[in-house]
Length: 418
Image 1 (cartoon, rainbow, N blue to C red):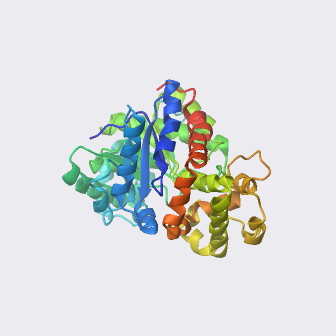
Image 2: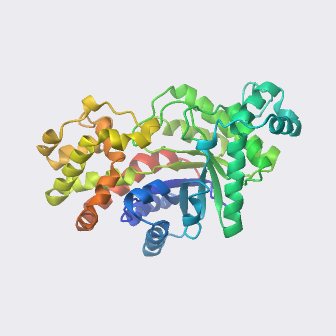
Image 3: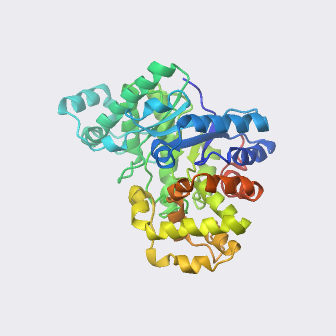
């Protein structure tokens, strides 16, 4: 299959105006000798909300790559696709995030569980894996319980992969996503899942498990940092073992979804990546949309007026906008300023409230999360919104580039050799 580089970084460009500004951040890092490949992503849900087509993502990315003469690999992600949605992405994507979260928990047949355990006796007793201090607490009962919960989801991933391969041949890189579910997967569970996927013949190069703790959109991690570091480190070792044992791609790596702005995790992840030589994929999704709003606020005039309007509409429809993202946001409505209050703010005040600088007392994570999930308000504005992006291109682009480079790429990869 198409081979992914060691480091890939997913960026969203929901209105297809910031690809050059995004790429400029990757250029700055490459000038320091560290190449991270951009992966432009946009889910079927986002296309539906905005009224766009998958081909528009590739067109915008390709234009930016050509304009800036980017010499390194880049990809377009069919983000969170399922069998019923994958076809519209087949012609324009080369990275496919197969989402099987909805099938997790549907119990597999007893005969299938018995057959799986028979094929994998190594999973029926405690298993020692290099790099992990204590043996994984596996047994026939433990692995059977995991397989019962995940076997049908992995079978679905196999079906979707074979459909992709029938249309694209080897011109595809595969990720499997299991993060949009209620229960985190432990390292032992991850190993069983990888064995299930290998049995299905899925040559995944990256997997997005649900980690312990809260990965809310656009704000920092909430949880036990030491516990996450141990979990992530053990997951890395599990992937290395599974790749060797089950014939999965040698470059198999972890993917961190809703990874934008997880500032407290970046030093931990960087340390593990440096120590182990592992790869990494991190997805930022709607961060660029937030930077567009910050740029319009900073620009003042009509840009600020529209940013205020968008916030006011989101404030009045908070329940509607938050419902699809309930597992990845935590908003205290009492902490949201009223539209009347925001209407009195200068552009710099609104920008400071939305810009994720935790040391700034003006930063409001509740506002940031609400605006993050309210991008369809801008979509309803049509050309009014995009015309303002064009009119204020420089100030918006500055926000986009600085956010990706200063707050994401540099902390994650700045001292890691490619």
